[in-house]
Structures are given as C-alpha cells and as structure tokens.
Length: 166
Image (cartoon, rainbow, N blue to C red; front, side):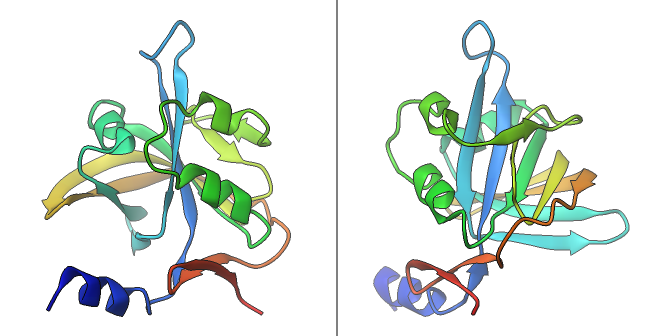
C-alpha cells in the first residue's frame, strides 16, 4: 500500500470541520492568536467531557499547545468555508492577518478566539498528548461550551473538498 492509496481511502471518510485556536501570550507585546483548521476532531468522553484533535508534529499549533494548556474549538458551519480555507494554508508566517476581518469573541476561560456564528464553541484544557506517527493526539477536557446556533448546517470535508449536507 502506498501513501497515496491510504490517503485516497481515508478521503472517502466524511469529517466535520473545526477551527482550533489558542492565544500565545509570549509572541509580541500583546501576544498572538493562532488558528488551524482540523478535520481529525472527535468527542471522546461524556464523563468527564473530553475531545481529541490530531495535530501534525512540528506545526505551530502542536508547538504552542505543548506550552499553552488552554485552547478553543469552533465547529464551523457550511457558510464558513472561507474561514476553514484561510486557516488551512500551509507555510504562513503569521496568523495575525488571518483573524483581521473575521468576527470572533474571546473565550472567557481559554482566552482564544471563538468564531462568531459557529455551530458551537468549546473551551478546553489539555489533559493528554500522545505521539502517533507524524501527528500528536491532544485530548482536551471541555471546560465551557457555547451553543451559538450558527446559520446553516455543518461544514464537512470529503474527497479533498469542503462540502455541505443538503
């Protein structure tokens, strides 16, 4: 089996799209907000409330969540495709401009940006980090939930493209 065959097989699994965010207090005089689009995200446990996200080893978010224990998740709607695409770009130098014209509220617990109009938002604290090949699985305890009831249905990712249920 080749990497391409494995990737093609896994692209046939539809996934929800989320934006994972955190605030880096040590980057600049006021810190910097960091965000990344993720499709490898899932609920793990109800008691205690736990979620899991898969981060590429060495990515900015992986490095940041090694030091910063609090982070946020926005479950994106199918009307927020541009947000997902913007934060999925590889090789960007700074996230500051990516947040510039996106409406968000700062999480009261995690301090990270939570996207306005998302289907729901979660504020999390890292519980566990597990190395898994070229990724790290980060388990987070959910400390706060926002049910914002954004417009539209969930944004999904299937066969290499953003989709909506319809």
